[in-house]
Image (cartoon, rainbow, N blue to C red; front, side, top):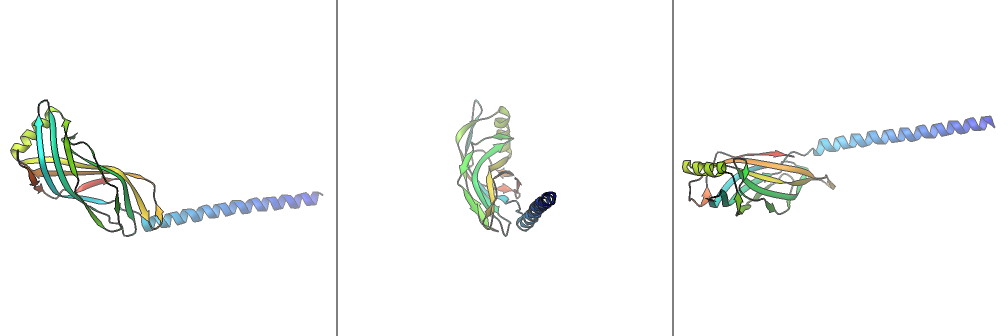
Length: 202
């Protein structure tokens, strides 16, 4: 009887050892596979560049309120050869001297194919936005000088797609600082001074 109990105990121990070994091997294989997939498909950030700007309206009133309508042409490039990008949510606004001068505008969802380029031309503004006296006075001086510094901001959420696999959602924050040549009362296409690239945080 004792001998039978000992045999059962050895068998149970061997079974547990086999289960734990199998689990350890499975975890190691999973980790290695995940690492290989990441190394192969490691996604690079998309790139954004502003290539055109138009200002159709830019007025200030007292108390300080700005009413403006602007359009920007943005080229975004997906540098990944194996990874596509889904932008499930994307909005844009313009700021001047760190204050928003347009309300956020929702952009349509965007699917960005692998290693491709997409052009966006959102129209921003159209409503009145209260601002500080610093913004109003700065805008008057900059327009008199003929150069206005603006910031285009894109906010949203994206997912990476590699083959049949999709990642979870990641927040994306794009900031494009630019100088535009603008005199008071001018309407239409305005020159971009320099080549305004954009910083992208994910």
